[in-house]
Image 1: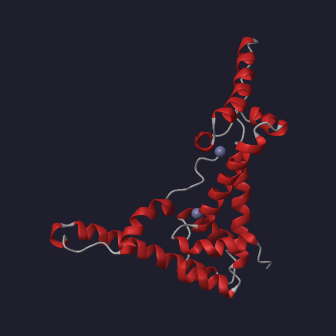
Image 2 (image 1 turned 135 degrees about the horizontal axis):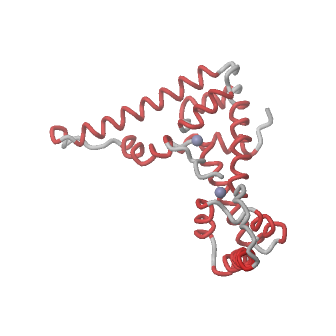
Length: 211
Ligand SMILES: [Zn+2]
Ligand SMILES: [Zn+2]
């Protein structure tokens, strides 16, 4: 397959002790928010969409706030508030909440990244890199297993992932054991220290906020 930017990006992210699909979706969404601040808040098309969808979902509203400033909040929310107040004055029903633009983008890019992962898994170097360093979250593990049903390397993907998840479980159990007063002198290993800090991201569905 063509080794595009995303192919290389997934491969590079395998060293991060995180699901490359989740981090890619998140990072691309964050860069969209960055661009939004500087270019699109005053864009007519964007503002129409923003009104039609009644702003972002709660998660992206908070992300927009974290990236934003007084001016871009004034631009988009003055517009939304004005429309809402007019509706109220005219006794018009408020529109139903529609899809959040950024969630929609996340759903689309997630599908693309999963497809690239699945195709790339045919290639020896990609597969070996995954076997050596890669891991995916539970959610994407299940989705990829379903998508890769007839893939020649589905068993390889399954066993490589399970092996790492079992290793994480062992590390978590070790932390519990070492916390016991009988083992109080035993220090946490570097792996155990990173595992307790990253495990939550492998177990929650990071797309749960999407509407
Ligand atoms: Zn994931
Ligand atoms: Zn959203």
